[in-house]
Every structure is written in structure tokens, then in C-alpha cells.
Length: 112
Length: 112
Image (cartoon, rainbow over all chains, first blue to last red; front, top):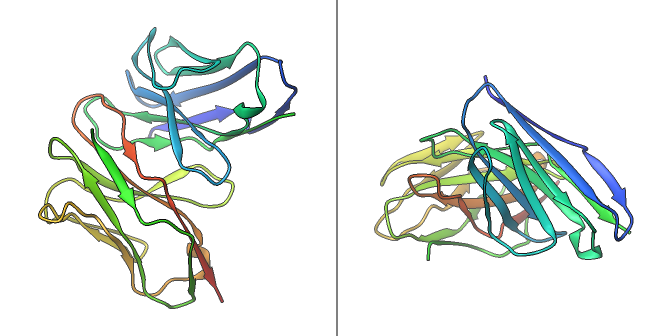
């Protein structure tokens, strides 16, 4: 069966520090991968999605970036965090040709 | 563009009350429709889905019927429990690699 993991689950980072959130999917090949953000009390915002290695589509211009170095690995990064980057970050995947996406457990980021 | 509109919360109900959360959509094609649930502090979980008109998705006592004529996918449950307290997201998916489109979420609180 397919599983998705993301880490770390919780982190507190100072303003201006770098960020790296990692997500991996197991049990499937060539999935579509997504990063969403959920600010406190708000809905889901799609940040990035990827249909293949090295292919990244950005939905919202900001100081975040994403990379897909391997088929089932998706990384969210920032060189310098802002206070407004605080939120709940969710990685998700969808199988090729599938219509359902499945979410990871989420990562809580607090920028102080 | 494609969009999902769901009723704004929060919705507060007493235990065993009937629940309806409205969801309507706008799409250029024939989407699949979903309800996801997010329990406090967790990622999103697929609750139910329907892939074509008149299909009924059901799970854990929740139901939703894909109504093409009214472009709706309202979520219902006959008798809610305290454990149903969560945020509920309606979403649509079109074919291909396009990301899911989510509504803004509806927070449900069930009190004993």
C-alpha cells in the first residue's frame, strides 16, 4: 500500500533562518506531488506541485521554493523565513491518472 | 476558472443533531467531487468521493450526492457526535495533472 511521510512534524525557526521540509511517498511510482499551506484559521493554499522529477509548478510567488530530486521525494525550502511563513504545511500525492489526492500528517512551522 | 464554494462556519450543533454542509462548484468539465476532513492538529483525510453525476459517496455515516443539475455536493449526516468536530473541505478534481481545487473549509463543533 502507498504511504506518505513528511518531517519534521513541528519546528520553531527564527526570522531570517533557512527552512527545509521533506516529504516522501512509498509504494507508488511517478506520483504527482503537492505542497499546501494552511495559515491559522484559514483554508488551503496550493504552493507548488510537481508531475515529475525536476518539474515544479509554482502557484504563489513568495520566498519559498520546492525541489523534486527523486521520483518520490518533494522538498520545500526557504533561504530566509518571514513571520508570515508560519503555518501548517501539508504534502500530498496523487497517482498518475488518479483523481484522489492523499495527504501527509503535516508540519507545523512557527517563525519567531 | 474552476472553483468550490462551501458554507462558511463555524457550525455548532448539539450531539445527535442533523448536519448539512453546503458545497457548490463551478467547473469547465466533468469533475470528480470530494469531501475531506481535518481533525484538530492533523492532516486532511479523504472522507468520501463521487466521480459522476448522481453518484452517492458515503463513509462513517456521512453522505453526499453528486448533483449535476444544481452543481452541488452537500455533505449530510443524520446524527452527529462530538468526535465529528473537525474542519470539512469540499474539493473538485478534473482529469489530468491539474491540482484539486478546495473550498475554504467549514469548521464543525459538536457539543454534548
